[in-house]
Amino acid sequence: MAFARLDIHRRNRGERTLVTLAGDIGTATTPLLRAAVEQCLLDGVTVIDIDMTTVGSCDARGLGGLRSASTRSSPVP
Image 1 (cartoon, one colour):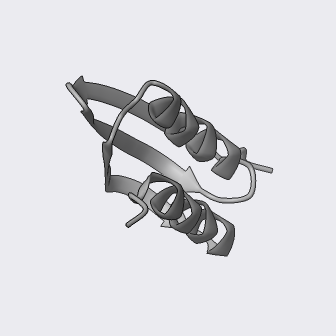
Image 2 (cartoon, rainbow, N blue to C red; image 1 turned 60 degrees about the vertical axis):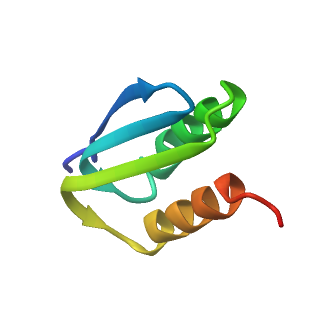
């Protein structure tokens, strides 16, 4: 059985951050994505850009993680 892998790289640009993902987003790796976004928010980042150019696959759980990240990082009117 192959293990899923997700590499996460973060580049800070003031209050904006670029998170680059490489690998697969699924059941085993979604917690890594959530933790990365959570850390950005704890660090006071106001805008999080996520680059998925090198993501090989993203299952329903991964999409849920991305949706959750979007909801948590969106400003409340």
